[in-house]
Image 1 (cartoon, one colour):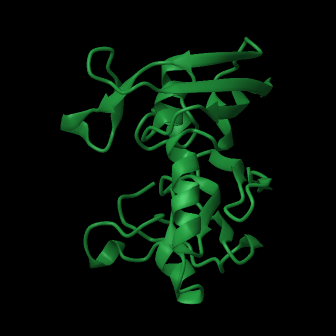
Image 2: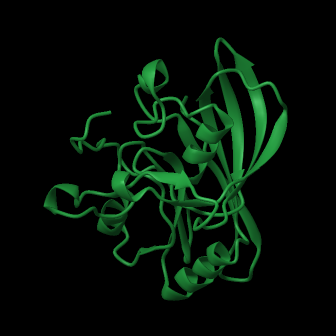
Length: 215
């Protein structure tokens, strides 16, 4: 992946829409929110607001991660959903293709993370000053020198899944920050936000939104 920002021009892929919520399938290579500078202004938020001017940000995904992202369509919904994310009441699952064949069936990674300041925006494990970060994982398939994992982050740290997979010894394929050699040489970061469960801001009913991984 080059450092030139050249986001895809896919039309909005709307998974769900109602009076409070908008759920979109984000393509890889598109920023969630604007970056610094005019050349980084194109992002999913501005594209969504072009169609839904009232849309408000609730959470974000890394530029290179694809999949389910939820927006609020009212200030009430933004507060309601924001609290669910803050209190870890949402359930998120991701699918990743990682380097190497994982031998165990499942596990939990509990390693605190902090910004790797000289190498921002990279993160690193920091037992002294890091913030708690926990990921549960399950093996879906292992063959041909790679594995497919389902990842369930219990916390929402920046680059959490990417660093945790690296610490397992199985970096995510196509990761420009944490993979090296052949594992890095892929068309995209092989990480996809597969499903998100939230309580609806109008009435509190549990709802799960899903999107199949494109890899």
